[in-house]
Image (cartoon, rainbow, N blue to C red; front, side, top):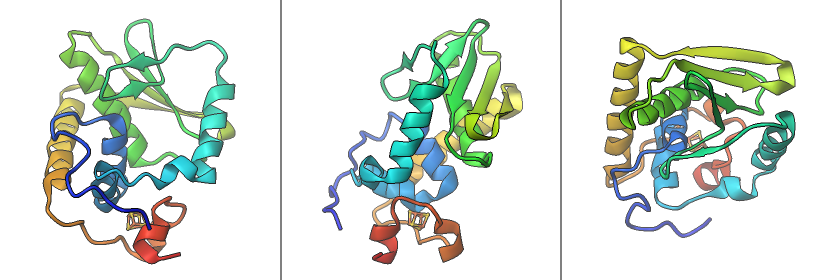
Length: 173
Ligand code: SF4
C-alpha cells in the first residue's frame, strides 16, 4: 500500500477529466487519486488502454489544457475521447462533458463530443447543451467537495470494484 499525501495533490481548483471520470465511477477513487495514489500507473489494464489509444488513430492532436488533456478536437469543436473498454459508461460521457465545459470557458463554441470504443468499433455521441452544461458544472462542484473531504468516501460494493486499479488499496488484494 502506498503512502498517501496528507494534503490533496490538487489545489482544489483544477478539476480535470480524470477527476470527473473517477468521481462518476467511484468517489473514493477520486479522493485517493487527488492525494497522489496512482496505482493505474502500473496497471496492466491502463497500459493496455494506452496502447489502444496510441495505435488506433494515426492522425490526431492532443489538446493540453493544463488541468486536462483532451485526446483531440476536430473542426467545429467536437471533443473526442478514446476508451479501451468495450462497454460505454456514464463516467466516459461525464469526462467528455467536462472537457466541453473547459473549452467553452476558454471561449470556444463547443458542438459536442464523441467517445470512441475502437475494440468494439463503437462510438457514443455526447450532447453539449444547457442540460449537459448544468450536469458538467454540478459534477465539477461534486468533485471539489469529494477532494476536500477529510476522510475517504466508503468503498463501493465489491461487485462495483471489478477491474479497478485501486483494488489493492481498498480490499488488500
Ligand atoms: S476498489 Fe472499489 S471502492 Fe476502491 S476505489 Fe476502486 S471502485 Fe472505489
